[in-house]
Image (cartoon, rainbow, N blue to C red; front, side, top):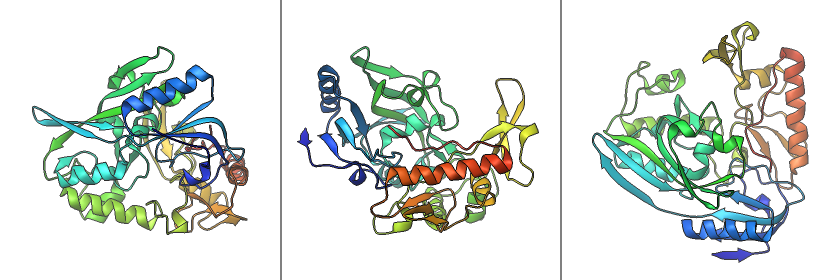
Length: 342
């Protein structure tokens, strides 16, 4: 366990904003992670747990307590019939894990290639892309329950997974993810391709499969073209990926001309559709490369908000607020930010 007092949140996040950290605690094992959390709780210090920092907007004032930086590692495989169960430490870099599963010919994670961050964050956000969500692959999430001061394991039904949502997101800070177990299929070909853009890139029909390596490469190429593959040397990737989630609305409230996809039945029994947030942002006057000082939309994708060195979270959120207001005024739809603001 390493303790520092010279860190800044800007250096721990892909958006590169945020002030000084009072106390940074870097942990390398699950036991160290639990100890660090308990120490902060026992001392009454504010606690912020950070993995890859790819979904975090750091406060300009910094953090007046402990930031626990999760650097735990380890992947344990158990074969169960026609499935391979991988228990993955929370601190494992996500794309390294995806690359390893493709190399080992384990199907399931390949559409989620190129997503930055750590494995422990994936169930919190129910990370998804190109027709796949981690919710369909997770068999359990092992956590530290801060209120009970004990470990607690959640099965899929207990995780409350929904579109970019989960029990862990709904109760921020209540549970610290220690590891996540995924069920993958040992095979050289992918899960069925269900995303039209990916199928076109691969030259296959929807519902077809493709070699795992081909799917991973195609996803990486698509993401790179949108500036969605984190590269410290590329300023156009200095973002949190998609800044807004695609809004889900009743069919009767769909926006004419806006691309949409079926989104099931709402709590009121009405049929719903998912709208393209990128289309809404662009059509509200914030196209690719729209800048306001040191923040703006990426020149490669209007849904990625990027920052320049020296930018502040206040600047970023002010710009995001202008987008939300413009979309609401023009289309009557309220966009919801995806990154977390502690």
